[in-house]
Image (cartoon, rainbow, N blue to C red; front, side):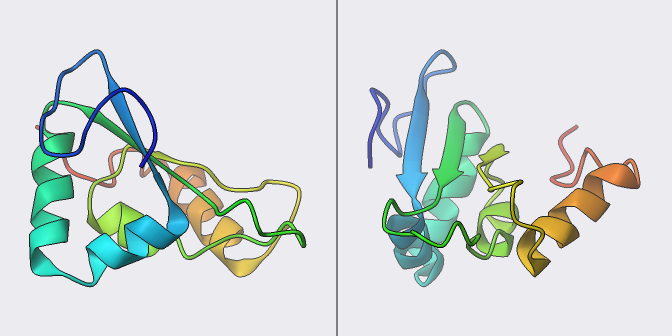
Length: 101
C-alpha cells in the first residue's frame, strides 16, 4: 500500500492507495473487506491496476465497488468489459453506487 495514509487509521485529508494485488488479497478475507469499508467511512481509498499490465487491460473493478472504494482507476483507452460496465453505471446516473447517506 502506498500513500501517507494507512488502512485502518482513517483521516479525512489523507488517502490510501491500494494496488490491484493487495486489493484482491483484502477482498479474499472478511477482515480485509471490513477494514476497507470502515476506512471509507472517514477516509479516501483509491484502487489502481498493477504496473505490470503492459497490454493496457483493466482489472475487475467489482471487489473495489463492493468494498466501497471511492476512486477506482481504470484505463479508458481500452473498451474492455470492466470499463464498459463501470461506464454504464455512471451513464445511467448511478453515481451513488455505494449508497452513502
